[in-house]
Each structure stands twice: as structure tokens, then as C-alpha cells.
Image 1 (tube, rainbow, N blue to C red):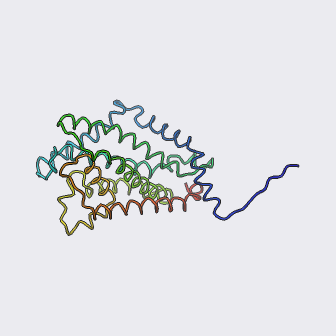
Image 2: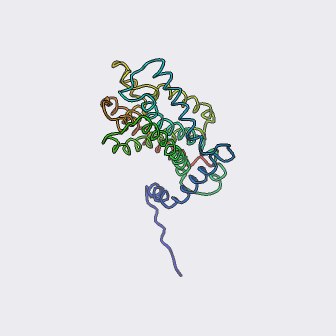
Image 3: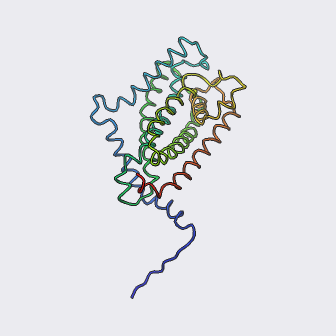
Amino acid sequence: MNTKELTLEAGRLDRQYWKDLWRYRELLYFLAWRDILVRYKQTAIGIAWALIRPFLTMVIFSVLFGGLAKLPSEGVPYPILVFSAMLPWQFFAGALSDCSSSLIANSNLLSKVYFPRLIVPVSSVIVSFVDFMISGMILLGLMAWYNFVPDWRILTLPLFIAIAFGAAIGAGLWLAALNVEYRDFRYIVPFLVQFGLYVSPVGFSSSIVPEQWRWLYSLNPMVSVIDGFRWAILGGKTSIDLTGFMMSFALVVLLFLSGIWYFRRMEESFADVI
């Protein structure tokens, strides 16, 4: 008679969870691919929406802040200044919105089978990253139009993309878990996204923020992401306020780690509450 030894070990479940994330990686690919396919299904212009929305926003911001308000442009054409910030902001805002509703949208799946729930919101971030890549074509087009060539700093762009991922996943995990418990967040998230656009340096440069308000301004985690993108893409005279950048970056790390901690803490109750 064959017998199997069962070992109960403290902390084993947590270690097994991270191994399960790897084991269920095909589910992550499937969910992301499914959401990509249905994202623009039955729309008249399809994936072109990923280009039109950020392009029109860029035009409006360039007219308002660059044309009418005459704000400084760091020595580059204002549309390029705006779009180099619009890219990470659209990625963050899209990931935040999709993450917050991802668990509710997949409630049938969550209540029937076991898999690491972390896969669901992370797949939403990947879908938003696809939009980010498509929107990047507009930036390339603007560079070609204005005959703008980035310098060596463009090689550091993957670092700031990774920081953007950390901010999107961290904030998204918080909101996804909170939205399961409190459905008020389906109304709060659109407000947060709209408010965040105004307090983030998307339509203007961080250099216009007065020195005495820099510490408060840097409490916005997207400041480090957007300033980093501009530093890497625009090069030249663009600079980063290192103190403010490090403060904002530390908040991204805190947001990412606390988001995973809170999501893991609430995860076991999702199937009962949702």
C-alpha cells in the first residue's frame, strides 16, 4: 500500500502562493489576451481609439498651457513636452480604472475555481500597457514632425516604465480589493483619475512649481514617473529635482508593497463577498 507523507509547515502557504503565480502564468496570458480582444470590439474605429483620445488631449493641453498660458516648454516643442507626460499618465489612469473593476468583472471566475487572485488585476495592467505601446506611435510621429532626436537618456526609459508599472499595480491592487468590499469605489475611482490629471505635471512642467510647495507636490507618486519620462525622452536642458524625485519614488515603492500586502490580506474573502 502506497502512502504519501503530508507535512504541515508554518509559512508554506505563502511560499506556495508565489509558486502558484508562476504555475498559473498561462491564465494571466489568457485573461490579458481576452481583454485585449474585447476592448475595442464592436466599435466603429476599433484600436484607433487608443490613438485618438491621447492625441486630442495633447492638442487641448498644448493650446491651453502652451498657446494661451505661455508656460515654459523646457526648450522643446510644447506638444512633445505634453505627450511625453501623457504616455505614462494614460497608462496609469487606464490601469487604475481597469484594475479597480477587474475583480467584480470576473466574479464568476473567482467564485468557482482556485487560482492566485493577483493574476486578475495584473492582467488589467498588461492590457493598459498595450494601449501605452500603441500611443507611443504618436510620440514618434511628433518627434519626426518637429525633427526632434532624443539623446542617450532615452536608454534609461525602461527604468521609468518599470516605476510606472509599480505605481499602477500598487494603486490598482488597493482599489481592486477595496472595490470588492465597498462598491462606493466605482464612483470614487473616476474622480481620483480626473483629480490626479490636474495635480500631475501632464500639461505643464514641474519647473513652474514654487520651491516651497515642492515637498507637497512630490507626495504625488506620478511626479517621479512623469518627470523621469521627460528627463529620458526630452534630454537637453530637462532636469530632475532629485530630492522631490526620490520622495515620490519612495512613495511608489511603499504603494507597491502595501498594495500587495493589502490584496493578499483580503484575498481569501473575495469569493464570499463578491
